[in-house]
Image (cartoon, rainbow, N blue to C red; front, side):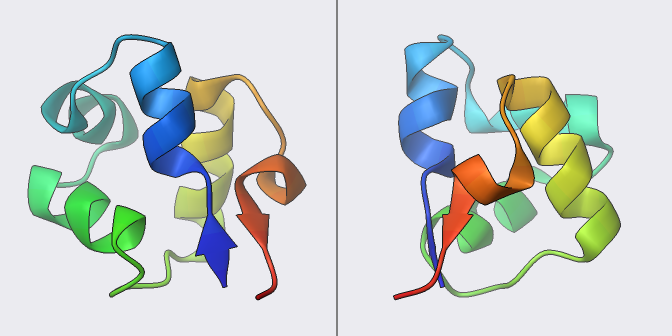
Length: 63
């Protein structure tokens, strides 16, 4: 699963720390998701999409 979290986060001028705080997770979690080392839960995927102003489908795509 490929994701566009890093690109969307940077376009909004958010740090990993700020996105993590808004989503209720650690910066390390955001880093792991961005680097395809961790697949978020469905609820976290929806929170990420909401904070990044897009849909879950807009964030994640099959490889």
